[in-house]
Image (tube, rainbow, N blue to C red):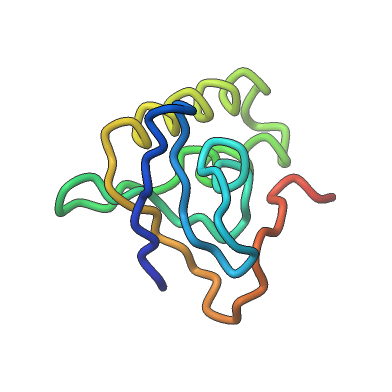
Length: 100
């Protein structure tokens, strides 16, 4: 598990992390990456809300709205957070969690 610290781009209103693929936007990439294990907020690591909900959606146990709400919660965690916890120890880079 790696900790990828945030680099905030105030002029673009974006947050970047240095991934195996280079500097990527947390909002556009990490939010949808299968390797994203959570967000570090202070000393705590909060699990990725999308990762928690996607299994329920795949099984039909959760409505799609739960996944949308999880994405909104992820954005809130990024606003308050310091880093991403990434389980990409092999250095694969971005891998979409929505591939079927």
